[in-house]
Amino acid sequence: MKPYLLAIVALTILLARCSQSTQAANPALVDKLIKQFESDPVGNPPQSIWRYDYNGQVVYFVPAQCCDQYSTLYDSTGSVICAPDGGFTGKGDGKCPDFFSQRMKEQLIWQDARTH
Image (cartoon, one colour):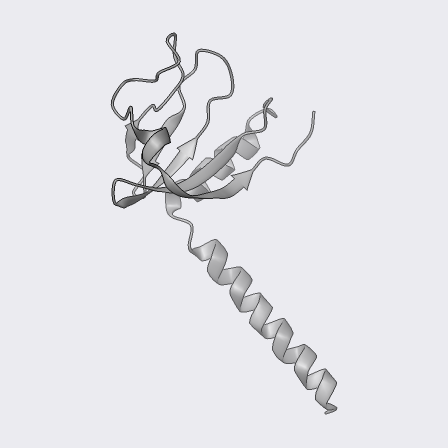
């Protein structure tokens, strides 16, 4: 086999493994939310899932779709921690008022790519 073909095969295998491991890193909660959001009508703004470090743990933030609705903050097991914002006052449920000032390592996990 020619050296460049061997390199292409090796790179293809490496990229396939990286792709699989990245998807496998999502907790069951994220996969469940993605399936749910993809079966829902397209939102405006598009639905999204964000990963952060907050209070020493990995958390997942789902912004509200519209006015006066709560955003939701989940722990890595899928339990709801709080609603950091939204609602009538815009300040959420008051259970994690420091989320926006204390969150770190923002990472977009998924965003709905469908259009209206």
